[in-house]
Structures are given as structure tokens and as C-alpha cells.
Image (cartoon, rainbow, N blue to C red; front, side, top):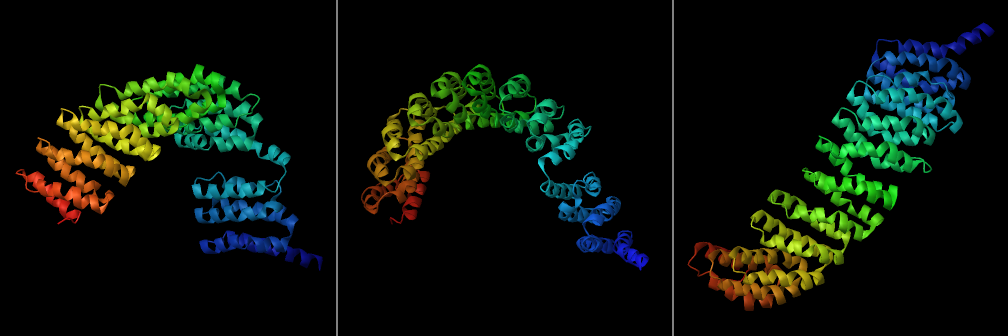
Length: 470
């Protein structure tokens, strides 16, 4: 009877092994799905000591079978204890989906064990990790760099100081731009997660020298990635270190030829403002912004002042009026049309941030004053600005302050101004009340519709039609 019982107890494993070796892939998949049933029949001890070891057969199977095995083994967290060769094997195969499932299962298993056990058995991962950080394939190094902050959190502070800091330095200096980009993206998070008692020393001694090199990297994607996070170092290092070591790096990136680098710096100026204050910021960085805004190359001017609404929102209305308002108004009379056009859109975005009342007191009077400029191009800019500002300023300001100026400009001596008046009236018409449309706008458009210039007549008739004034 004992022998018979012994034979019966081996039956589940024998069946499983036969199915795992079967030529039919579907049968092998079915056997994987029945692992739970087999384990239940065998019991905890025999499942751990016998059944799971046979599953190493799966590591040489098709990707579909390996993926199923890697996923199913995650259900055996308590059974596996700290003995999981099948998963270790599956975590090293070539197919990404299989490795991902194996790692996912390992994570499930890790949740069932104490921190002490994990440190003893999972820290064994470090030699492989460090080897991967120096792998001959840049794609492997890239993945390490991309997931570095997650790895840092997993291994803890001591291993971070002894092993990860040198590895991170190497990734920041990697010969491949893609790897440097991924590492640069993680600079801020890596520094934040360093042990507090040694954070500043590690950053200043080991990380900052690498960052200084990346600021002038030959690859714009590397510089852009760094620019998106470098400002965040100011909150970690504090005021003194920011002023002494970081501001110069910010200045270099503010003047970078790549627009995305400049944008990423300007987009995060509020981080620095919180640390060093607006006074220090205005003394250090804003002169560089103004210098770029007045650059002889119009494309440089265009690139920098498109960020002005963003900058204004970060620095506040009072500071903007004092330091940057006159600059924005000067762009309205730039000799390049693209600059004047963008400056008009710029004003609209500023009004959206600071409100109609600010516009009425600060922007509108200056814009309307340009209607009397001797240069007809500047007079037309007034009309373009009114087109952009009418909706954000609202009915009262548009009717009371802007409309009279537009109507007066209908008698301008230049035909280009005339047809732009017609287009402007069509644009602001929906903002005006019906009485103003009938009593003031309609007569002017009807007069323009009889103009001898075909363009003026065309746009006037179009405005009458669109506004339903016929």
C-alpha cells in the first residue's frame, strides 16, 4: 500500500512534466494554467521542493509559454519562500514581455517577505545591476539610466552611496547621447532621494561636476532634458549654493541656441524665485532675458518673447510692469512683421493672466496711442491689437475705448488701413452691443463699401454680411 501511495503522490508531477515536454504548444500552456491545481494536490512543501524546480524547463520554451509561466509563478509567493530559480531564469531571457512578467512576479513575491530577507537575497541583484550600467549595448545602459531613480528607492540609502552614485556619474558621462539624456532627466529625483545627512556633499562633489559638463553638451536633447530639471536643484541645495554655483549654469542655458532649452529654463524660473527671491533673480537672470529679447537676430527675439506670458505669470504683475512691460510694448513697433504679429498675440495672453482692469490701465492706452503714429504700419498694428484684445477685455472696454479709435481710423489716408478697419470691425462686432453696431459701426462700413479700392470695398461688404447689418 505504501508503494502504491508513493506512486499516486508522484502522479501530478509526472503528468505535469509530460505535458511540459509535449510537442503541442497549447497543451504546454494548459499545463501552466493548471499549476495551482497541481500545487494543491502536492501540498506546500512538495510544491516548493519538487514542482517549482521542474518549471525551469519553461526557460527554454517558446516566448508564449515562458510568458505564461512567468506570470503564473507570481501566485506562489508564500510557497516559493526565498527559492525561485524558475523566475530567476525567466527574468534573464531575451523577450521583453517575458522578463517583465517575471519581474512582476518577483515583486509580488517580495511583498511576502521581511525587509531583512529581501536585503540578504534581493541585494544579490546589485552585481547584475552595476554590470548592466556598463553593458556594451547602449540600449541596456539606457534602460538603467531611465529607471535609475526607481532602482535607487529599491536598494536604499547605503547602497546608493556606495554603488549607485558612481554608476550614476558614469551614466551622466556616457558616450551615447540617449543614455545621457535619460540620466539627465533623473538628476533632480536622484538628488532628492539621496540620504539627507550626506545629500549636499554628494551633489556638490559628485553630481554637480557632471551637470556642469552637460550644460554645454553637444546634443540638444541632453541639454533640453537637463534644462527641464536643473532649476529644481536650487530647492535642494539652498540659496547660497544656488547663487554661487547654479545661477551661472542657468545663464548659459538661457542663452543656448536651442529654443527648447531656453523654454525649459524659463518655464521653471519660479523654482529659483522661491529660493533666492525676486531681487536676486532680476539681478542675475532677467538681464540675460532682456538681452535676448533685444538680439539683432529677429528669430532670437521671436523665440524669447514668446515665453513672456509664462514668465509674467511666474514673476507677478508688479514685477512685470516694472521690468518687462516696456519691452513687450516695444515689440509692437519692431521692423519685422513676424515680431509685431507675435507681440500682438503676446498681449492677449498677458491680459488673460492679469485681467481686463490691468489691460485698461496699462496696455490699452499705449496701444491706442499708436493710432496716431506717423508710420502706417504702426497704425495697422493698433488694429491688430484691438482684434486680439477685444474678446479678453470685454464689451465695456471695447465699446468705450477701442471702438472710437477704430471708427476714426476709417478716414486714414492709406487704403491698407481702410480695409483693416473693415476687418477689425467684423472681428470686434460680436463683442459690441446691438445699438453700437447699428448706430456707429453700420454707417462706417457702408461708407467703406463705396470706396474706390476693391480690397476696401470687399472687406467692408463682407463685414456687413457677417454682422447682419444689411
